[in-house]
Length: 300
Image (cartoon, rainbow, N blue to C red):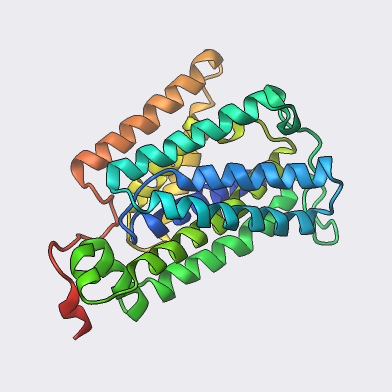
């Protein structure tokens, strides 16, 4: 029973970290997409290759995964951040699906069967189940990401007001001489780093990685958590959104008489929740109302 609770806590932390990473660039930066799942896939596969193929230790492999995702973020950020709204979403989705197609057909990445027997980073092997050691990566990452969102990008923060100014009216921000490109790249790199840690946590908890570990279903789940919790709002609300999604999925597993319908019913339910939230309140339940026009008066 304890292992079951801890495993579901790990799933909640995975979704919280991916949702908070998405909200860094989406809710605060104004470009909502699925880049978090893309970088989670990059980080997860890099961790698997380092530990299994190269024989590198788990904690050093975590560092290599972060290094790979940050380099990829600098390259992809230079391309993606030139795009707007729907274009950004489609571009991140296209690259995510493209990477998964490559992973599905390249032998070094395991192909459709993926990479198995992936060790997990541990702290003195306190937990009996090695898969549960993913909490040592996810727990600190979620706390650090929450602090960044609250203290650095909050409404009372100077940096937060600058970032939100760019989000609300990028043209006036450029006219006032704000370093728009640099701030957006910084947010994108942070998104990549935290998403990469989420990817490491996912493969470490599963013990394997395959293209199905980071498929479109995960992207839709993360977007559901983001909009259910509220974009650009209190990052702690992501915990409530993630727990709601996980509990709902677990409750739907109780359809023991129709196990073949569990997956489709879960997908339909989450899609209905996402559409309903977008129809009722576009920025989610706990997200702030975005002001139209320049925000320069906040800096006076």
